[in-house]
Amino acid sequence: MSRHAGPRHGPETLAARVRSAALPWPSLDWLNAKTVAGLIVALTLAFLGAISLMLRDIGSYARRKIDFPPVAQIDSAIAAAQERLNINSHDLVSKVELGTLYLEKGKESFPEGINELEEARDLGALDPRIFYCLGIMYQEVGLYDYALEEFRRFLRHYPDDKEIRLLEAKLLYRQGLYKEAVAEYERLKFHFPNDSLVEENLGLSLWAAKSTEQAIKSFNQLRSMDPVSARRAEFYLGQIAFEQGQFDQALDHFLRSQALGPIVGIPAAKLNSALAAAYQKLGRIDEARSSWQLVLQETPEDGQAKAALRDLNRRYPPRRKDIAKKS
Image (tube, rainbow, N blue to C red; front, top):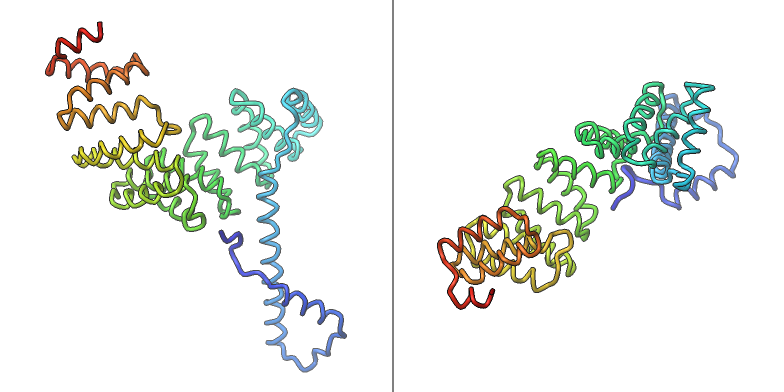
């Protein structure tokens, strides 16, 4: 991934500048005003570019390196910051510190943290941690529009920050802005082509955006990345095939997913529900019944599974030998 928005000077260029600096400057009498102005503009742009790159690194460093005290000392650190603010209510450093401490203390303190950081910003604080901390806290309290705006503010300053781009894309998906989420994940994929998390979320976003064929391509790529990703990809491909009425293909994908092992993040009951539905669509009643029963063993209060099994037993009553086996 390219870490910088613009070109950087190579080492040979810098070395040449050092050599030039060691020599006496020639007289500028032979230069006309236009040439001098051009040189000044070029040097100014180079200087501003270097400063921009430096500030980007500083901002990313500042956001990632919030030095929280040990958990046992959080309350005393908050009290110390509040005491400094009692002396000087416009102490921006203490306000930002207090806001980040409330973030670390936990969700019950997020409203206070949001108030401190918003007030610090209103008073003129430019600390880049403000965008990050506000984004996290707004997200956690369910104010997704506000969180999205904070992450976007951060990305306007530091567009190469992977973590914040992932958080922004996740919020876009959660807000139902699937095409915008696709655009963000495609951007991330360009820079991280072998990242399974990016590929999976891109596939899910494409699927939600009704770009099903593209989603299938994405999940097929996910399937080739690693064993854990392969299990998840097979499950998603099975769901798509089921939606399209391709029940044989759906069942094959679900069975491959099951054979590869437990799917991290996807409950076993969900896979068994998918298997049961596919078996039922294919008229494989005994296997469907067994799968629904497995779902209820794992999640006894699953109303959908109860209704499906009840309806299945009504239309296809179990054979007497099966009832005898159960008793």
